[in-house]
Length: 477
Image (cartoon, rainbow, N blue to C red; front, side, top):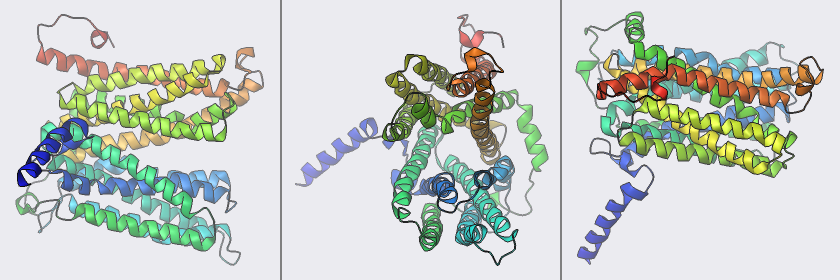
């Protein structure tokens, strides 16, 4: 029996890395149970993201009868802290602690900010929506503070958590570790969306308080489990008397590397391009192609499915040593083809073409996101992990927020102007606002490819100095 058990175990272990998603992300230094436990901080971030941008967005407008512009302002407040992620990452690099921890304190600070913001958020929303005896400014001020606290917590936790994962993972497994962390973020969003929608099906003020404060407790529990015994104590790295580099000097060192500027520009352009359509896909399917509510809801599953395929494919390709800049450019090329299909779905009135385009948007976005992050990690030879990942996170989160806002705004503006006949007969169609945004996204992706192209060439020439092949990377930019 023991022999049978050993042979079965050996067969399963051999099968795992080949067929189980991200099973090969583990290593001797970071075994799979420990890695999965660490990834719980991404699950909590995914849960809070769904709560803010999905559940509360709908509840505040529909059940609580708040103005849409106030809701949009509140939901966007967490993005205020996105540009500070570079500073947060640098502070975690240079943190002084007698206990010898660099990342753990910042993950804990972020957890406390998330927990605190969520703890009093429901009361602030109730005062804001229905409290005749309270001053008019009290509700909005309290709600704004709650959303700001949660936003600061998300960005602090995610920046320090990604830096800790990078510290713990060996260089050869980092691409698969990063892809796994992205998958866990999506898993957290998916599970949370289902649970939160069920809990708030019968809305009441009391149920709102229970759900939001329950989310605060879940955040605290998940992040505590994720952080427990993850970071080794290294007092030599956190001594108060050690020499540290000021943020301004560290930032100048990072900027002095010619790779960093081009990469961050490509991240900003590519992220904005893939994000602008987030608020448009379902309305486009319903208004332009006449799809039912159920059919448009499935688009989210297609987009998420494509993203998961892209994450898995990027982890596998990067694990084989493929240049992350080249893989990111491939993801953007897939995005260009995807948006083209979405545009042509209107004149052809083809729901199938639209669905394929949606799947490819997810695939291209997944390839681009992980590859760009791995390319940023390659900059750790000129700066520490915290600053590099913080800079990437600041650019990525800010571009995502700006892209979301621009997508909806430009669709409304161009649609209204086109309907009035100012732009000519070609724009007097319902799809004009949508297709303008999709064409803009294609243009942004081409600009991002131009920005990242020389980085592919530089790496390629470094590996093959006598290579005379001419391709996209060699085109002048």
